[in-house]
Amino acid sequence: MKEKIKKIISKIFLGEYIFVLMFCLFLFFSNVFSWQSGLKIQKSFVLFFVEMITFLPFMFILVGLFDVWFSREKIEKHIGGSSGIKGTVLCILLAMLQAGPLYGAFPVAYLLWKKGASIKNIFIYLGAFSTLKIPMITFEIGFLGLKFSLLRTLVTLPVFILIGYIMELYLTDKNFEMKQP
Amino acid sequence: MKFLLVFTLVSFIISFLSDRNKTFAGTKKGLKMFLGLLPTILNVLILVSVFLYLVPKETLIKILGHNSGWLGITIAAILGSISLIPMFITYPLAAILLKSGVSYRVLSVFITTLLMVGIITLPLETKYFGIRASILRNILSFIGALIIGLVIGIFL
Image (cartoon, rainbow over all chains, first blue to last red; front, side):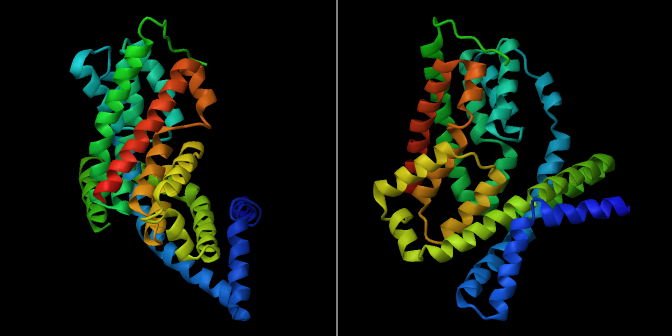
């Protein structure tokens, strides 16, 4: 227990929170000497902080729940080398049910390639992964509104499908193959 | 926001009624993620507060606002293509910038390039896809992202 407290204290004072602590100190002195610039910065910081701290925990709970109910392994099982429209739709759905940055999608794309997905579907998967992930869209709706999110989704969908087609058109007959580094 | 809170609550209740252990694990996972990102989020909020103090609102609106034209779009597209920011930070940041006078068009170009183009991750991408395919994908995505951003800008 003692060790744990020590660890937390050292984490706060030496680790990731050092900048935050310095900022708090800055705010403290701004208040003591009623330094106008500092007080102005404090005003906007408090405004942003209150807004974030009230919403973010709930959104992260949603993301966490999403993660346990739709695990990657579960979805991967349903994806084979299905071709045609069905394959494309499955690739998009698989991508939407995931979370994380784009580089997390490369290994999954490799897996799809190994299972026989077409070039077109591999790149459509990447497009959907980078723009249509459901956990990401919930964040987007929360912060930028349903209208923005809906509009972006509708405009993005045809664009990355087109990119998939162009990639396939260009890479067929060019001995394209994916590798696992 | 209210819609999302209700959605979270409903999802939580459904999840809880179906499987308590899973719900517990998911909630824990989400809160752990939140705590892990908290210092980064706080740092970004501090930087934005200081930035918005140093750069007057009029200047920000002039460079990135509704009438900024190609300058704003170019800045947004370049920043979006070269940076690697997790979406958990991108969206709160975008909401603040929007309130400070940055236009939807500039913000949507920034967000779409950020999502689709990855200059920093290009070396990793080439390891999986090869140089030719990776560069082509990024160029096409850049053009696509610009188009998407501009179209959103027309409607909002």
